[in-house]
Length: 126
Image (cartoon, rainbow, N blue to C red; front, side, top):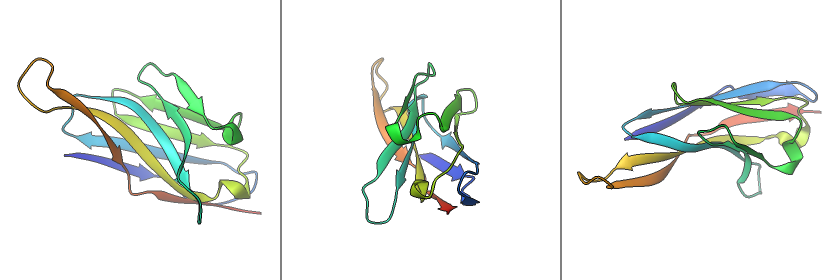
């Protein structure tokens, strides 16, 4: 089984900073892309930032220049550094890990799965 655990949410004033951390643990061969998503009340979950194993990154337009995603492949961790926070950044933030797992004994018996953390609340007050 695979577990994804987030930490670091909280309450901050507009203009402040927070860092979210996430670790993936359990039984898997490797982790492909890791990312952070968020879901505000009454809205759909959206991608905030993602990072590949080779450190290629992708950000949603609203956080470009303010958020930075990073990962440590050896520790299976991903961090999201959030600066210049705005009230519209308020949401539950979820960590996602796209994980490669063995499904059989053949040379190519692998499959990828998406695993999610339980979510961490980020609240930005005006």
